[in-house]
Length: 300
Length: 183
Image 1: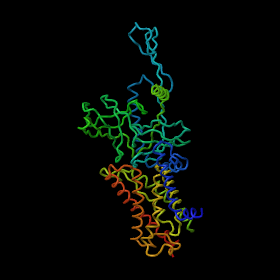
Image 2: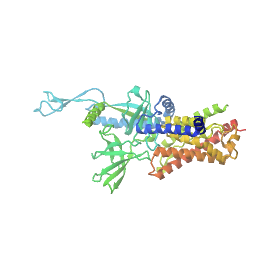
Image 3: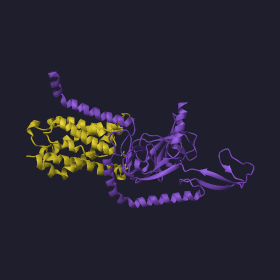
Image 4: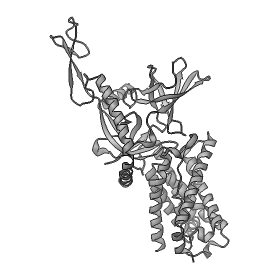
């Protein structure tokens, strides 16, 4: 026993070193395997507070650029709204839009639209997304595996895990971890894949980020027969957690892969990750129902 | 100022410099011209470099672990900085023993810095320890040897800029570093 204690005392430095290394390694593997299960993270109260204070100061130096981007987004939204002024998809209430139709033979449609005798139809629409604006208080682009952002909205403001995050003109990522007042977002600059479609309708594609540049992502395995040219826009699909038809970016380069008989598209992201200031957290109101349905399908 | 208070203040100052200033450098467009991958300079290992020579190894290990965990919390890296810091603190004594002419126990109340060691030995010491820190950090971070060139490029870029900031810090705070322990 005495010898054992002497042995421990002699190698105490190495033993302590190994213990500390094992603790850090287990923390690393925990954060890699289970997203949002980190023991230490930037969405806790202290780090969140410090980042918030810093952002309050830096914020004023960016007001001019911020104004411009908000103005652009306003103009884009107004254009979009003018195009579909008779459908109210963004408000919470049920919109009843009378549509006059010529068809007088059918009285009741199978899809649920009820025809009244006057020839007008009541279309019932629910807004399926709710947007929560948030300010980015910490941002990183230099990590090679996963990049995180911290925003100043948390569980108190209705942010939940796995919600999508977008900006006015592009995608940002998804919520990984929520505390009372802050939330941590895994940005698109990580190994997470984004379901993608091209502007001509080619769907079922996947976009990933290759480490090295925060400005580009790669859409892989595009069939060779698809007609793509430089400058084409690329959008999200409704298959994954992002809302449908959000702009990802524009095609910057096209590489044809002889071996797999496909093309790889290098895409310039429309989101500028270097100066993100405001983002929207997207609450999918029918997402839970859809996830339950898909889980049931998987069980059978 | 006592040796403890001085080190606690340096801890806070270095964490704030790292988190509030240096972590924002890769976000600026001028930091990576011509397709250079984004890199971060790390100044916080300087805290471990400047710990007093008389500090016992177990104490140093624990203090560096705390430092690493603090940076991990701010940068969302899980525990990579902690692992790199602990390794750095573990080899520090050996590197110092190899570089300094006398036995370590003869340097009472002294910390390794520019005034006590001289420019060349101090920079050698920082290069060796920072290189150990950066190599372990980026190996765990990237965790693949498929693109060795990319790994080496990131290590080199980060190491060079870290050295620049460590030197700048030593120049700015040289008077405050020297007065306390040097006799």
